[in-house]
Length: 110
Length: 124
Image (cartoon, rainbow over all chains, first blue to last red; front, top):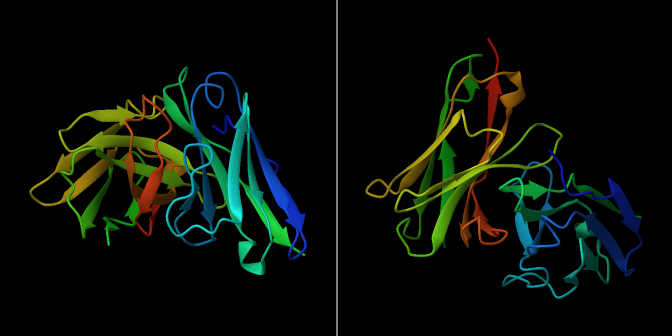
């Protein structure tokens, strides 16, 4: 039921800046804020970004979020080995009346 | 520190009802402005929001599951519960409970505290 589209994979080298995209529509990203989650396999997701670009307490400022129209992006600067895991975007969909998640992006640190 | 813990049977037979409870500790389940939700993740797949509840009992359900889902809250026991009826193998997943602010219909709820998750397998 993924209504938000993310690339299945992304990669970067240590210290590099990488971005992960999340594409939606006018009824979800175009109308509501986007949240991002980081999930280490076998553990619960962790809220990384809320309200498009707000970092919860404890989230390093290497992580940043942005939104434009019906797309959103998660940027990770100063890439570190521990950033190698899965990332999900989420938004409320006004037409479906449901929280929709992206399919997830597996980030590899080369 | 707020903590959430899922509990319930790990194995459910097809056509039966899946029942899980999420116990909240380190904070009040009745705090104004906080909502309590269920999210699931089939093995190797993405996340799916099941529904949410406010301490007053107001509920919000995923339309695709609404006919089979009931979420309830017991503030005296500091827990909220999920019941999913007529389960099939497609309901096999890790089930998470989580807290969020913002009613789902107003904006995207940020799930800021999560339980560790519990794998429920539907099999005879």
